[in-house]
Amino acid sequence: MTRFYLLLLLLIPIGAVAQEGGDYLNKAVPQEWNDGEYFNQTMPPDDEWWRNFDDPVLDSLIAVASKNNYSVLGAMENIRKARAAWRTAQGKMLPTLDLNLGWQRAKTSGNIAQTMYREAWEGEFSTAVSMQWQADVFGNIYMRSKAQKMLFMATEEEYKAVMITLTANVALTYISLRQSLAEMQVIRENAASQREIMKIVESRYQTGLASKLDVAQSRSVYYSTLAQIPAMQANIESYRNSMAVLLGTYPQELEGWLNEGHNLPEYIEPVSIGVPAMLLRRRPDVRAAEKEVEANAALLGAAKRDWFPQLFLTGSIGFASGEMKNLFRSRSLTWQIAPAIKWNIFSGGERINATREAKAALDQSIASFNGTVLTAMQEAESAMSQYRSSVEQIVSLREAVNQNEETLTLSLELYKQGLTEYQNVLDAQRTLLTYQDYLVQAQGGSLIYLIKLYEALGGGW
Image (cartoon, rainbow, N blue to C red; front, side, top):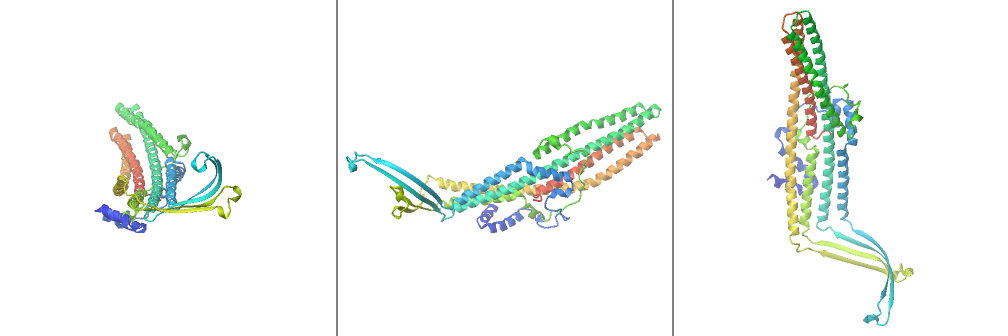
C-alpha cells in the first residue's frame, strides 16, 4: 500500500511531489521525531558545523580536503556529466538544422535507349538548409528530459553527500588522532610519576625500609607502562597516514600540522537537532534517493508514451543550378516539406518489455528510498543515544579520576611513613592510569558520536 501511494505521489507535478514527499517521510519516522521536544537544547549553527569545536587546525584540514580530495573531484565530474546528459535530452525537443553545400558533375552513357548515340555531361551546384523535427505531441521526449534532470539533481545531492562524508571523516580522523595523542600524554605522565615513585622505593630499599619485592613491583609497573608507548605511536602514525589520504597529499607534507601541542576540543554540552524528521530530509542521500524515484517515474511515463504515434516534420530550402553564376537567382530556388506520422504497431514485444523494465526500475528505486530512510533513522537514533550516554560517562569518569589521584597521593604518603604496604600504592598507580585512559577515550568518543550525529542528520551543508 505504501508503494501505491508513493507511486501516485510521483505522478503528480513536481511542486506537489515535494510537499507530499515531506508528509510521506513524516509518516515513515517515529512520532516523537516530529516534535521539537525530543532533544531540547540549543542547536549549533548549521553552516560549517565543525567550527563549533573552535579548532583552527581542524578548520584548515577540512578546507584543504574540500579542494584536494579525489572523491570530491570525482563527484564534481559526475555533476558535469549528468548536466551534459540533461542538456542533450532537452536538445531533442528542438529541430535539427543542417547546411548542405555541394557540387557534382556526371556523364550520361550514350548506349542507353533514351540517349542512344549521344553522350551527355551534366553538372550542378547546390546549397540548402534542411530541417527535421519530432513534435513532442504526447510528451515522451519531455518525460525523458525530466528524467535526466532528476538524475542531474541527484548527482548534486551525491556531491553534497560526498562533502558531508568527507568533512565528517576528516573530523573523525582528527579527533581519533588527538585522542591517541592525549592517551600518549597520559601514558608518559604516568610513566614519569611511576619513575619518581620507583626512585622513592629504591631509596627506601637501600636504607632497609622496603623489601626487594617492593622494588621489583615498582619497576614492573613502570616498564609495563613504557611498553604501551610504541603501539600507541604506531596508532598515531596510522591516523596521520589516513588524514593524508583524505587531504589528497603525502604524510610528510602534514608535518607541523598534526603535532602533540594540541589537545582534544573541549565540547561536551548537549545539543539539539530541532525536529529530527525535518532534518532527516536534509540528508543528501535521502534527497538523492527521492530524485532517483522521480527520474524512474518519468522514464516509466516516457515508456508508456512510446506506444502513441510520433509526428515528424522534415523540410529543406535552398538553391540549385547548373552554373555557378545562376545559383542564387529566384528561378534556382528549391524547397520541400514532408510531414509524417510514424506509429509502431509491432516490435516483437520490445515496447511491452521496455514498459515492464521501467516499472521494475521504479519499484526498485522506491524500495531503495525506503531503505535509505530506514538507515538514516537508525544512524541518527544511534548517534543521539551514544552521544548523550557519553556525556554522562565523562562526568562520572572525571570524578573517578579525581578520587584515584587523591587515593594515590594518600597511599604514597602513608607508604613513606611506613603506615601501609606498597601494594596499596601499586594498585593506586594502576587504577589511576586505567581511569585516566578511560576518560580520554570517553572524551574522544563523545566528540566522535557528536560528529556522527551531524553526519547522520546531513551535516550543516
